[in-house]
Length: 95
Length: 207
Image (tube, rainbow over all chains, first blue to last red):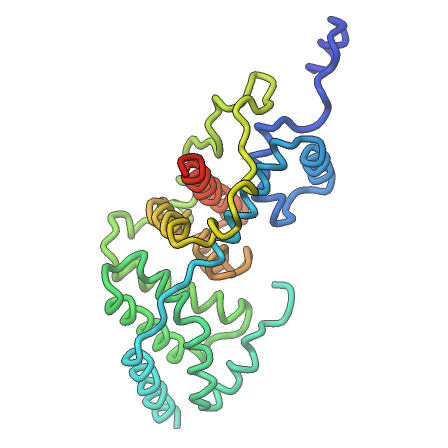
């Protein structure tokens, strides 16, 4: 509809495809491969043409790398021992 | 769910009474389980109790496990429900599905809207982090910052990002463990990731 109005008013049509504001809503889905094929194409076309959104998606990738580095706690030796004992008990009850 | 469950061989041995198979599973998932339990209970010791109770629940229910979900999915479902019951969060009687919908529906913008012009293009664009050495992203400060940001997230966003991006569960596993829709899971992950990215961006902007 906006394209039509722009053509009627002889303004240059806005670039087709997604705006940067729309892109930031789709980044997570795009990185998971969850976009529909047509939307995915428009998404990646925008990224390749837009250095700002390209910087944004790189920030998101870097964020995921940091997230992947968060080390969880390990079980204490006592907890491991208790679990072994629980298993031995369970196994006995199975017999 | 696509693909065979990679834990099936260990599960088979566990059912046959193989203690080492059980301990392999315990060591494989224990740390992630502790992390989720710690969302709900105040100390490491209580979190270990929750993990213990979960494994007991698994052992006692193992005959009934039909393999319709992965073992991991089933394990985390038991864990999250048990942790929630033990925890003292206010709204723990509200089902995950309802909270997921609520958190997904709340107004949210991944980036301040005033960073875009009326045409939707950036007016205040993000900087490239290549200017910061990759080492900075691995620094203790950045990790602590990310942990703090995750701790501030609402319950479902915190669970989803922890299970997906920290513990490596797949989207099907997470949504089946929490019994939430695929759409809600995607929205929650998007929101959580956006907030963490924003916190890191602020960190590097001030650095």
